[in-house]
Image (cartoon, rainbow, N blue to C red; front, top):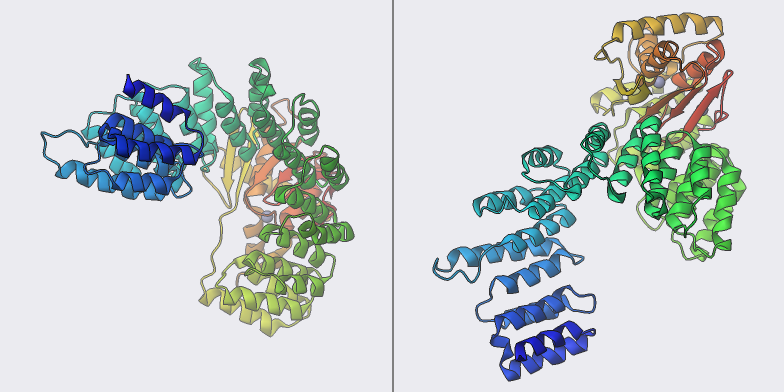
Length: 589
Ligand SMILES: [Zn+2]
Ligand SMILES: [Zn+2]
């Protein structure tokens, strides 16, 4: 009876002082010897929001021979705390204790709960080396049949980015539930394997497994990444049919998907039709959606509505609104918004600085941009110097270009684009000696290049292209199509922007290096297949991982004119909509 009564008392604790009182009562009344009550109290103290983990550790230290549940309470507490990696240290101590105690005493042993809490700590601490060790423990202790535990392990592998192990585990699992599917789909979707995530989602669908809000959020994320709007629409259909559209997180993911796939009106429809409460993320997603489509006025209109809805704009809201200004060249509005941020209690971070420096720089206010960088309380990110360098190139300002590139070299940044920019500034002033010096520097420093990569969704599949890629089944036809395009756009007045290629090679080779850029391959493929596919009225949509280059930008303008076809390119920064020979960005990018 006393035990039941005591247990109820523990459950009724809702403040830390009650826990403390109970603990001292336990000590004096001798209840502390009861391992059951003790571990209950420990658990309450270590895990509940009003508990205190360091006090739990104190209680633990008073136990002469801690048992499994005592250890588990502490590991669980740290796993959920702000320092999850400490849980791993406790697990190691427990493992040592368990293996050194005699085999007859099974009072401290690693059980399914220990593994589960430690795996949760691995997932949160992003400790990739620890998960395989636990995996081995789980196998050794015959716990593999525990479906819940396996899913926790799968989640740990996924969150740590070890997607090969996650996939293998998933395939080997005797029983899978929706959480196991979700863990892998989310891991793939947010781990740069969006393609596989969508395939798995489709398999789930064909196997008739019910997908919940977590599944669709991950799958919509994969569609956003790939620009796969047709798949995205199907998922949106499922969302509506299964009433998941009442969930604000699902709505946010749907808005983001449509916006990132280039359908900002559809994104707005979803935004507008939300019946329940919108979260600040909902608003931010919509502002950013309009911003990257160059619809600055609509972005700002929504930003200003935030306050009418008594929602305080956060750092992301400001970033989205500044991005809108940046893409539309709204210099005054953007600069004053940046100044007001801190007064509204939002400290600017690196990304805000990046926006405002870019905004001022592009408008030719290089000195102001430079002053802002110099006034920062944190160390400026190389990206800021890169924007200043880019702006110096546009405005042909050698002095600023040199300041910025010197900083970049000091910071050890070896990006080929930066060298190209600096060299362009010199070239524009006819300083060929300096152009040559930059070129030499590039060679001696072995400048790094991030491979360009583009996607296109066509004929029911997603096609991926690298620069000068010859891995596509139809690569020969694609290259022929590019030859045809080159011929036709030259008649339209196109001149290759070979100044963008900084190699010691002939003009013709330079032109070749440009014409097989990943985005050109993707557009050529789109033009090639979407005519026969009955999709001739729809625009060619391409997603690129880097910023679109100047030559591709010019080429697509000509293509849109010659082929009477709209081309939409989402690059790392924004959307470009090419139509009748011009781009929606008005060359402001
Ligand atoms: Zn290009
Ligand atoms: Zn453009």
